[in-house]
Length: 268
Image (cartoon, rainbow, N blue to C red; front, side, top):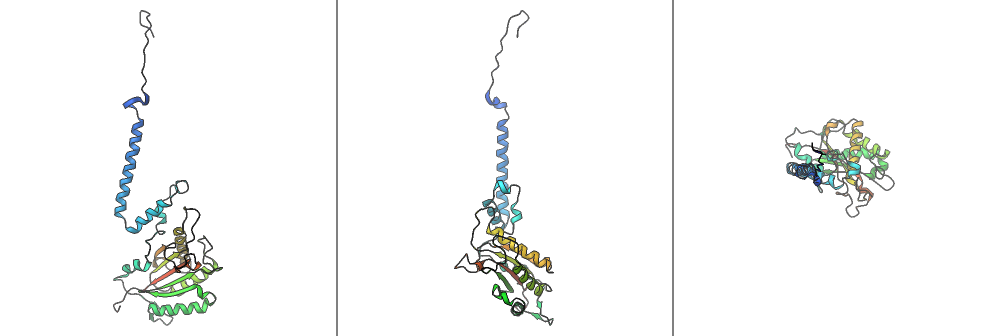
């Protein structure tokens, strides 16, 4: 450029890399840092507020999380998949039954029966209608309840390997069980268990499989006429509570457990 007298004026402009203190890139980085810290402290607060069971759910979700295959999903969709080891449904549901109006199961004569008598009744039904596979149905009592377990046998699975779709064998057994309990009011819990065979990928584990199978049993019960409000818990235990502890890979460890609860009466 030149002035009015025609003299040439040269103006030098010094460029500062990153635009110095007036640039915006550091502000973006700082905002990201503050956001991350806020999320971190929010997570710490949530962890202190939730129950121990849900803390395990959160830990398991992030342990097996893959951003490439599970982005946008939530650990809440797996809330039944993780439960504390060495914990059984009867231990968690029993406190809910305290102080409730006692209910009981009635036999065909209309007489009320105890867990022991119901055990005898369901065993007779199994002997009558499922005699060819009765060795795959285990019935026992626990405190204030009855447990019915559907166990795998070599060549006779309740679910195909790695699948949550019940086989015709499982459908047949669950139908007989449903027919014998659908006219009662007793609370129900359903547990899924697997053996110790692990998946090649960590994106789907025995926790997911055991829970998926328990959910499949619940859906069948609903189809067979059982009121969904009676099912108080769906649990997946993976391989943490084996039926055959000496052999974690035994097919009998793959099973569905149906628990029927009898609230305490004044005589107990």
